[in-house]
Image (cartoon, rainbow, N blue to C red; front, side, top):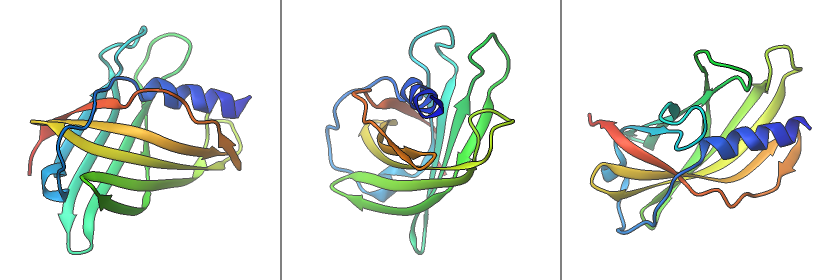
Length: 157
């Protein structure tokens, strides 16, 4: 049940979409990117922030998801997902996140959550963040047909 709830949360975060139109490199991806929820009662509110900087070892990536309570209003909780590996190929930044102290609710027992993501620049200051796979509480979560989250560059270095 918790796995399905987590899958629903991730599906809600990864909404929007269009097709990748040009091959880009890591330099084109640098900056702070923001995506917002595109429908539902939280439409227009933050869904995710992605910050990409270049370092000697390649892209330095920081992903923050915004988690909302199902019942009522209130400020979201932020969940920073540690990036444990990454690669850039064909204009797409692929990265893997792992959180060992993940809790769907504050009083839940901590568990691990792993996810594979892809980010691509699709236009001038426009990008897409896509959830590729998700493993939560030791179980693979079935893939979804959710479109990628549309991202806009909020800042350049």
